[in-house]
Length: 376
View (cartoon, rainbow, N blue to C red):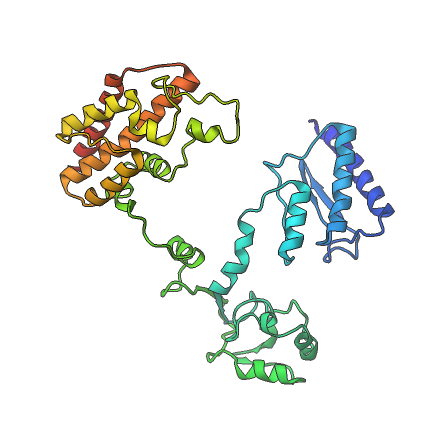
């Protein structure tokens, strides 16, 4: 779209928005821009739309977008657009997300992460007095109401620097019991006006952020699954281990799974053309995959025990949990075999190409040999 045409199109959208807002009795502007009645910003091909965090206000914006789409044929691309929601209840948040057809992403983690971040005050200029976690009791407004802000005589968006004087704390005269309690529980250290504030990541003993500490802090601890060492072990091939992980968890799209949401789907195994394609069949009841697996086991001197997929992974989790050279070779064999059998299945479905069992087995053997030589 040319620059001039883009300007004309955005002007049409602006007129539609202005008309919809003017005719609405329920629309409220974003609290930060209600004095100037700002509803949207446009720069080049970027558009930001703003409103109060209420369903009635969002409905006005949605109606304007729908009218614009009807006139122009242009539609919002959900893959490139985002909706930002702050300090709303989960009910309202879900209503807004569903209204515009978006999916909720990582912003829901913010309330979980905030308590894990602590601000160490020096000059106090970069830390919010009422909202940030710098006080011994945490964010002040999480424990006390906004009445304490009024009693202090300080703005609600005041920085901690407003109570710092030189190298000491300097609160206004206490006008309430709440303020007296806040003052009595101040940090034991003194501020330093010549140094900027710093941030400490509480889950880490060093105070430095790390992804591992963040993950451990946010997720619910779960016991280690028995097949953990079968899939994840030193010097593993990450791509192969990832596919083995998917297979053990039942997350590969075998045709029996596709059948659950598409009753017209072809269910026959593409490798042998004789049975329903399921995990138990594909690994390794299928004549094609069993021939490959048997060749691999014969090379390693391991007879095939004929177990079904779930029983075999349980058995392997018990007996292949170590890291001896033989055990590692067996684990490589399983992961690489699952990967290449699944890849051959995809090639036959999507590329209409077909390899013999001996060719696929040779690919697997070469991959294992190459990885083992790299380890040695």
